[in-house]
Length: 438
Image: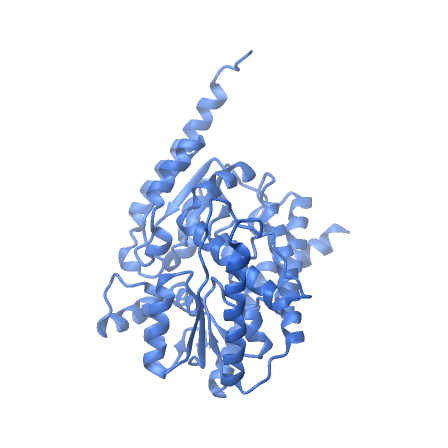
């Protein structure tokens, strides 16, 4: 009786992810065609729960931009923005979005509506300058929530840390002001019960999301955190706070547990795991499939990724909203999520050491990119710190998330092949070493 269950569940996460993303882009196209209002947000601190309470479709410019790279169309958008004066060094996401706006929202997967409002945090310095472009193009109201950074070495900071309650109240007051502004922009009254409903969905999504990540702590891994995890991350952001998102992650957890029961690995195939790796940074989207095969061909499986932490909107954290006090709880969740995201990007050495232990990793792959200095800053220093604390091998490769002009596949392959030869040699030496008796 296992086969019928297996045939309907294995592979469902990938298939449903593609279907949900198609539907999401169709809805954005419909919003654009009908000239309805849409809100622009970013993955770190999206506040989607509040916007869904006003029934506003949410647009994630980061996701739109990376999708132009996945669809092999990024070069057109980047060139168009650079023809308008943007430097090649400017974030590729920003340039692709700028060209998209010049094209009236034209996108390889549909048509993106212009922003009626932009809601952002200070999680990334580029967010602030990016939103100024929409302000200049459309006169879009830009509402920025100032989230105080970490004040101690505790990761993540909790209520017991001095000053946390004050910081939470500071964020809460800004959220109350945001709600008043959204009432003016949409012409609708705020419905706190609708907010509770979206937050309840986020709570359920978060529980399933964390359980999925935890499945890879056992050996062998049941999914690849880069090849498959990137799809999961996209759904987590685009459908956050929705019934469809909750159903997706509930089903995904069921699939992961069935893979474990059936002894299957990534993409539902028999496991070919030889090396357990952690990925640091954002994938190389212009050659996404070939990039991941450079590792999987050697039996390298990404059991975890910092991308699944800092870009998950805090879903990776063991935190759930208190629906009895929704706005205060939303403020606390935003504070914890943004702080964790920033710390995961800028001070990831301690988190990486913990992840190496939890996931039994034997290698760490650092991937700094030209487009994003925020996620690339300090990676070399982080590598030194991690290698001083744990006996693992580390690979440091550079390319980009959008711009294929700076991606050298031959050079990447040479470096990656050498890395795996080192891992193989290391394991052979360990196996041949005489046992130490005490």
